[in-house]
Length: 197
Image: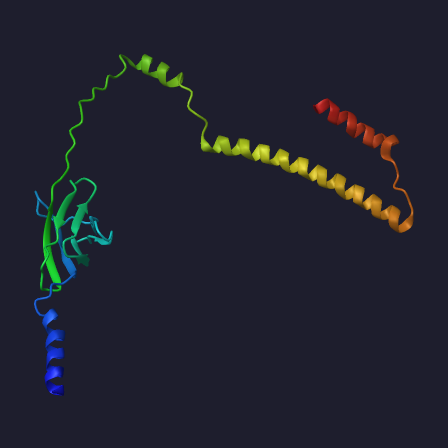
């Protein structure tokens, strides 16, 4: 009785796997140009369901895992986007594909270039143009502004340091720092700074 029961269990375990189709399929192949039949490199290849894919190599080959029934998209700059639907019911674990890509040609309207009527008009128009400032000139202006900002910060720090030093001197020794209000050198510096502004 046990052997019969064991036989039925094995039969039911094996039957579902017989004729079972593959869900994940290893998709590999090559992408070629439809006109020249040359390999196309750097083609983006992905499945719409899982958003997983690959990029074709220099020889046009690619390889990734796709799902049965998924739509595979092939896109590349200069080529029309194309799609391929993975067939359902495949019994093999791998599928090979040769995908043709058609070039996307854009026709531009005609452009007519009119030259200047003579050399003098050309020279006048070129010499009268005002080009925008170069990056070097912009950097020089930034450096000058930055230097002025540094000087202002430096003067503020010097004032803070002097004030703190005077405070410490008074706390430690009881000596008040000298007042430079009547110092003629400071008055000379003060008048010179006023003239600059």
